[in-house]
Every structure is written in structure tokens, then in C-alpha cells.
Image (tube, rainbow, N blue to C red; front, side):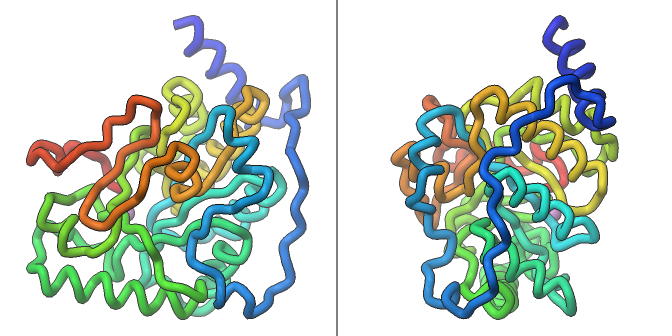
Length: 274
Ligand code: NI
């Protein structure tokens, strides 16, 4: 209870801009000039710079589903100001107009761009060939925007089974910490849910739909950076822990004693909106 009260207080202070100590923002990284060089880079290649060395401390992967959304540009600005990297599972039907530039910006700024299917489909209800079609449509749209096709998949609604895992042809990335941001729409609760439950090696589920998600996660990032946490992409997180990401498998986290597992037939449906 003591920890809970403290985290409520600190989330309120940070979100309202009243924190006594100004959180360190880390190394400021200017947005790189757009070039075509990214087209030649392997997608989601783990960064070999200091972040991986720094990652010998506590590391987590922030993941954002359902974007791009109206606050994606602001979120990318906040992440860049903190040198924090994230993984975006793109709702590929949304890649039109300015959203295409946001997806390209994600890739260009060192984030990992993953697939959340084309139509945000509930894959467990589809045939194998329909699953392949969803994946293929999303791959093409994301590749056109980001410069390379996505290497990871998060199933919409968190709905998956071993057939879906096999049919989608990519590593399936679930999560170990659900912020419930999709239902709560309150930045203090989003922040507090992260601070109260975060563990080294977590994959944290967020969405690109609401301002409250952005404000809540940014407040949590500042507090966790003070506590020695680094924010890396999903491939970087697993590389740091020496765990290969393979098609045909699914992953919940990269904790030291992780709960990644073979599909047991018990997990589908025990999840939030994904
Ligand atoms: Ni979703």
C-alpha cells in the first residue's frame, strides 16, 4: 500500500508538471534527416550503440498498438527527447496520408515497426489463407511506409492460438504488463499501473489512441529513468537476454525467469483489447 500511495503522488506530480526534481531526459537525439538509407537497413535491427551496453541495467519494451493515431507525432517527439525506443504494432489499414509519414518516422528514429494486421482482425476466427491475406496486406502497406516489412506480429484483441501462431509466419509478441489504458483513459492511472507492476524484462502494452496513454507513459518513463531503466525495442530486449525470436513461437516477456512458453491451449481470451 505504501508503494501505491507513493506512486499515485509521484504520477500526479509529474503529469501536472509539479515534480520537485526535474527528471533527467537523457541524451537528446535530433530527428535524423530523412534519407533512403533506411531502405537498405534490416528492419528492427538491434542498435549496436551504447544503449545496448546501458541495457545491462533494467530494460523494458514499451509497445503501442492500433496506431498511427492523433497523438503519435507528439509521442515520437517525447520518446526522441528521452532517447527511449519503442515498438509500434501498426493497424495497417490506417496507413494513409500523413499516417504514412508517421510510420516512416518511427522506423527512421530507431523504433521497431510491427504488424497488428491490416483490418485489426480477430485471427482466431479466420482460416489459414485469410490469416495469410491479413498478414500480407499489412506487410505490403507497412513496407511501403516504413521501408521494410514488419518482422513481428501482435494479434488484435490478444486473440491467438497455436494455429494462428503457425499461420502468421512471424514471432508473436504478447505482453507481461497491461496498463489498461484502452479502458481507463486516465494518465495518472496509466502511469501508476506501470510503476506499480513493472519488472525488468517486461513487455508493456499501451495504445496509440488517447492523449491519456501518451501523458501517462511519458510520466512513467521519466520516473523509471531515474530508477535506472532503459527503454528498448522488442528485438533489442530479447537480444539483450540472449533469447532468439522465432516464427512459430510466442513471447510474453524477457524477464530473467520469463513466462514464455509453448502454446498450452489456455491463454487465448485471458487478455485485454490488445
Ligand atoms: Ni489492437
